[in-house]
Length: 445
Image 1 (cartoon, rainbow, N blue to C red):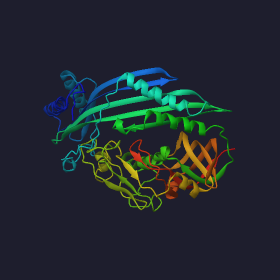
Image 2 (tube, helix red, strand yellow):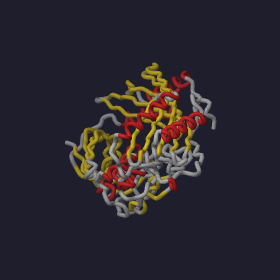
Image 3 (cartoon, helix red, strand yellow):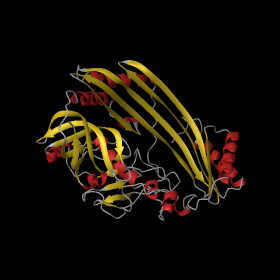
Image 4 (cartoon, one colour):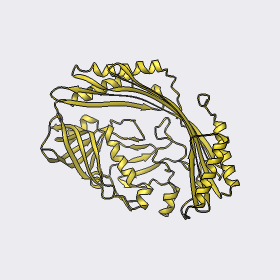
């Protein structure tokens, strides 16, 4: 690994982190943790064949948390100079002295910290000039326009590349960090034919060599947009609903939020006390795999330095564990799961059907390709979202639909998943195919 592309080397970030820990100890802190990071990248967007934006970013910062017993203070800055480091430590120390004691505050348990840091292949720099990025974005948008003459406008195509390097350390002797990268190509276009429709597509990877081609991204954006033309309303009904793969991961996201520490100890979750209980249909299997090479949600340790491990999250529909950092775990009388900072790669096992197979299985119902609004009650699980998609009869798509609302309750929706497709998309930390729900209320005319 070379860090010559960054303003500060791994060694320099490590030294700054150690300086923070040393200064905190000298100020009387009983414990301390710190993260120092830097990142840079560029984002190029074009619209209607013309360059719209060229954005560069170069960021750096540090955060320090000190503990005086169970009193906690935190401060941060974007200045990595020695004086700024001293001032930030002093600010955190001052804050800690005026905060109330919290019996659950403190560093992660030392025995849980990562001792070996595997190389997960998360850093793949993309030597992309501005001129090359512009050409890729133009190629992407042009491919969308070529799909159909009814595509007559565009929200633009963009090409983004980002790189980051961080170091985390604490007073228990942990000090580690690594570089990472993420690259994206996206496109959104508008078509008009007795009404106007918009859709988009994007590709995201750690390694630019694994991105979908710019032309392929554009074609998919164009094809998805044209398919939505001549959309109709439908009558209010109850029917099966198929969440297309790009949005199906959102359902898994609602589960993650409901079984995460903050929601649980605040008792603001529709899945309270669900550990060891069947919350999904019995065939559902979900694994958390933090060490997938090049995974968008991969990490050898969490935000507290706790080692990450592969685990079964849902086995035969039964919840096997929560998402906990040290603080929430202590509040719940449990042990951290290595999820300070969120979930890692969640992989939902397919029940074997492709999209065509799911449509045949559904028979008559609704395919949802877009969700609007945020009508979700995290306490009750009540779910109501504006939606658009396609009406299906006899296992075949009949026509696009719009201006509808789908409603149900997440607890019931999870338990009545009929199938999970093999049309898996890797666009984030949650990997799953399309999800078929046995029945939901679809409100239209």
